[in-house]
Length: 344
Image (cartoon, rainbow, N blue to C red):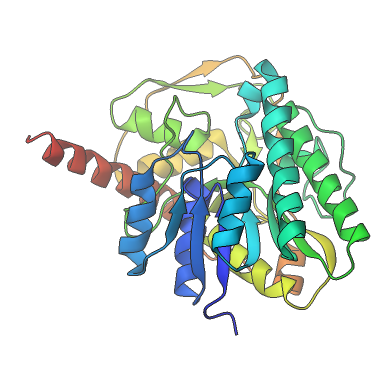
């Protein structure tokens, strides 16, 4: 039974981690979040508790800190670990490669070392479609990896290899390497969503900022070999992604080894198509302008998602319109709360 099993969410206070926490709580798991809050806040953890109607454990630690991590494992009998902890901006990784390699690889190794000391043998890793480089879509798990176009992608590729090697050396160890495509949207409650502390790097929060009167959206590149010249990506609702983690944890109960699995919709949407959908479903205008391509970006990337359906019994259920609607709702609710807090 999965009830009463306690799952550690490393980096679990962030965008994907909080949504996964809700999904796990609703599935009957207990949850402990460990996060250094470098790109999130403890308020998001409290929002998870309010949504799910359950308390969760929270440790304000850096998972690269072996001593702090060991103390956390001593305090809880973890059944499994879901690893979200890491820096994640592609452009920033190009400018700060050493910071990305140090943080992201150290976090993976620190977690595996601590799991080994405490006899925890189930692991779900937050990987990325960037490990495929410029593979031709639809991209299946059998596509070549290791042709990454940026340091962020290399950290995911290298972490996957570390996990595979560890699994090969430890009979019975079970890991699922979830290769995300492009998570967007927010929880249906409007209580949690994508809210980076610094200037956002991902497209959806930049669209939202522009729609709410912020900085004009810059569309990086309009000369790609795509129908409208803008980049095409596989956008996936974050709540669908969260449910994929629940399915992956269930899979680790009965399967050993390290299994790569894509989480995506299997459909591509261009930047301009996403902007148009956002404007249409929310009845707003998104001011935008064209800018040069960014280093490390590729033209087209979308998943072959059949393996997730066959192996995990998982399939994305929410469409682009719900992604856009929920992201807008989250920002509107957050902005309304800010006005209330300010006495306006």
